[in-house]
Image (cartoon, rainbow, N blue to C red; front, side, top):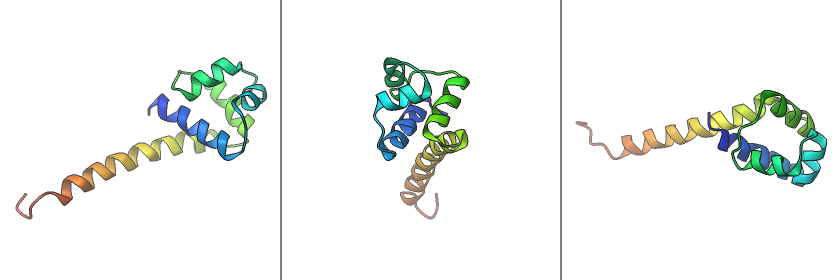
Length: 90
């Protein structure tokens, strides 16, 4: 799991809900600067992740699963690309 992808997932969910970073930071009880760092891949504690998930009114699983799903999609795409360029003998 990549912390950068998790930050990106948080950003996407925030934007999907029409929230600014400032609004999410306030709801999650963290500073705007820290919110920006999180969305840009800064590591966070589990408690901060819980606060953000509550502020977004989503399950932590949906944030983490979305990130994991994105990674597995990338790997699957790479495998399919490799397979599509192979000959029958390979």
